[in-house]
Length: 338
Image 1 (cartoon, rainbow, N blue to C red):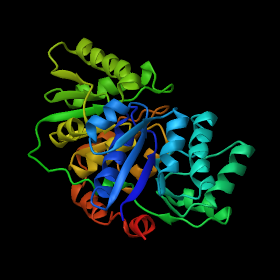
Image 2: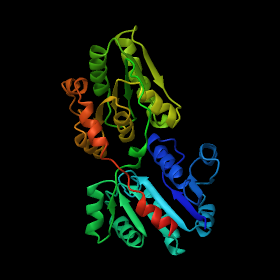
Image 3: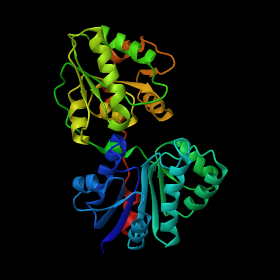
Image 4: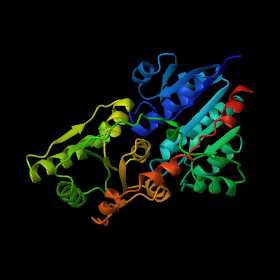
């Protein structure tokens, strides 16, 4: 019998990482006997990507209620939805969606999430209460699992689902990709220092600057590109925005080097065989860099010496670690289908 599944996440906001996770999840669920409803901020955009799904708007609570009532399962995730550092309101939004599903006795799957931090006591109370009633929980890191274990909630640790993507490894071109995101601590001093190193070390490369969530990234990407052009008007510099997931992956596929802030852009760099340097704006990026022994730049302590490690990066070691990244779908599939 066809299982009716509702997907809840940070979808439709054209954030590269969340849209990649959605694509992985939809592609997997389409191989099963399921019908899908996606909660998204932009139903037209999402339905164009996935024409065989139904889409409802993020804050249309009446339509969300109807969709959950007519469903068998709610899947919440992936990414970092259940935390209040970004916003207490967003935490309670995702908890309300989970509450509706639990209230109407639907199965709830927490999918490959990074849990916490949750600083508010009321947030901790309701999250603990609701997650205890989830049918299955998978998390993407040990810290999340430890937090839940402290609340006597069982979870499985899985790798990020984006590791399941298998981009074609093409011939590398003489390109260095630079992926920046808008962030309060990404200041002009850091941009100027990065510009100095890139212009000195990669002056004979094509420089591609990637905006992966245009509302947030485009301004800082243009500022960086202008700094490079002011440094040397002969530099071959281009800013890329308004890209689909495939556009981004294909551009990074061609890069010999990648400098990246966003977590999932770093993963794509690894998967495509680009020599990758991470910019540390978030602990999840720091942990990923540590796991793969990537050079890392701190926003408040620019160290140009890490570029030596980038240039001499051991891609064979990275490939060995990647080979261990096997996403386990079995428990999720069993929870949906049986």
